[in-house]
Length: 336
Ligand code: A2P
Image (tube, rainbow, N blue to C red; front, side):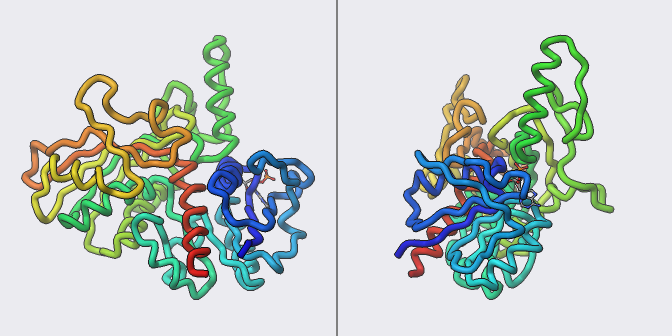
């Protein structure tokens, strides 16, 4: 069977890669429809070696669409995902709009693929990019040794904020190297040559929404509300690839060697851990443009009997968003 696939947000940083991943993986599509705002209607976007013409989401009739991949922001998902689902499509949504809805499964393809089957609203949610790579690395450890607490600091690239943020980092970097002053439009302060301890909006508890996503989404995906998560989200001047310094405390003692063995066998994970200069993953040397979640710096926590440290890097646009959405679509297709 061939499927009619819609990509909503096709001109965006994630939508562009959704189209290329669909083509790369030879997704069984009879037709691919690219949708964005009316501003982009008529623009051509790449689909493998072909091009497709972008259409205006607002006037598009979803009847006949089998699978719709959404990445145009939460407000667009809230308005249009239920309409596509009502028209018979399975919606795979990359926004945060439905991630905590008990009637919408939140799925990492390597971790809880079986959850796609329970989708009473016809919508499946793709996790936040930082949660995504963390779950691919931690789920095998959780199953083997029981994770009680996670302490994570992220080093997130600007592509997670969208295309305008990529442009802002490029513009500011070029400007500063030419001794010009720069303006910030997307981020509240200069991002070039800087780090910003702020992702999303501030909650009353002092954490940011990006930090609280790591808390709530981790518990949902691992199916364990007892896991304690402490997160600090930081934006860094990297174009593609999020990094995470992760400290975990397990119920059973695992040890660095045990963790390395588990991770070497884990689906979607590549261990890069040579304990020498360059023998660890970075966004530029390993993750950017790649599918895997890279794990290095695996070591025992000298301050805690059952503590472990890891360094986790992945392309936030691929595994963190577009690739996982397409993998979910493949799981739906596999149902027949
Ligand atoms: P457009 O390019 O027409 O504005 P990013 O996350 O990289 O900023 O991309 C956001 C995506 O969401 C883009 O494809 C953008 O399309 C799309 N989008 C934004 N607003 C709307 C809207 N009102 N209707 C449809 N698509 C939208």
